[in-house]
Image 1 (cartoon, protein in one colour):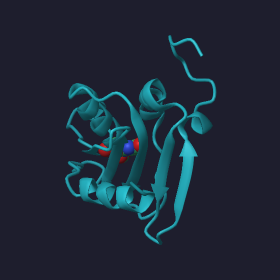
Image 2 (cartoon, helix red, strand yellow):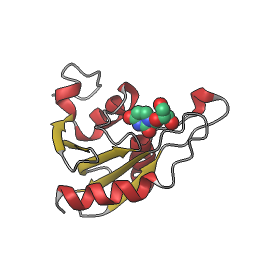
Image 3 (cartoon, helix red, strand yellow):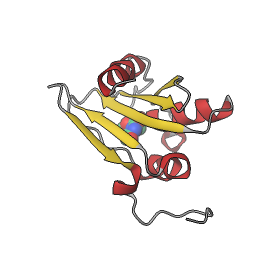
Image 4 (tube, helix red, strand yellow):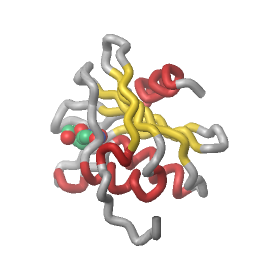
Length: 129
Ligand code: THU
């Protein structure tokens, strides 16, 4: 699946964002190595710390259904600008897709592709390299 298609799916996921506190909608589309796509949106809570980011929603949905091998993840937001994943999401991604692509897009149709490792070159992990 190409990056544009995955970005389009991330935009669809963004529409389901539950973000009445920040009014900031984020969508993620996670492609597994066997071609399945899991969508995720941010889900906020009145107890703010209970909020879950779009990326983790997509990843946790996939893992909980038995998929642990990922090819890439597309992320978009309502800002219209590139939206970088937060540190907690990067840590979660590093466990499953350290050398895989994060595909970012803005509303001008520009695309940036970075590896999880680019963001987190010295990640914490129990896994031996
Ligand atoms: N958010 C995400 O969904 N992903 C990120 O990588 C950054 C932040 C959400 C969390 C919260 O609902 C809103 O954006 C503002 O922080």
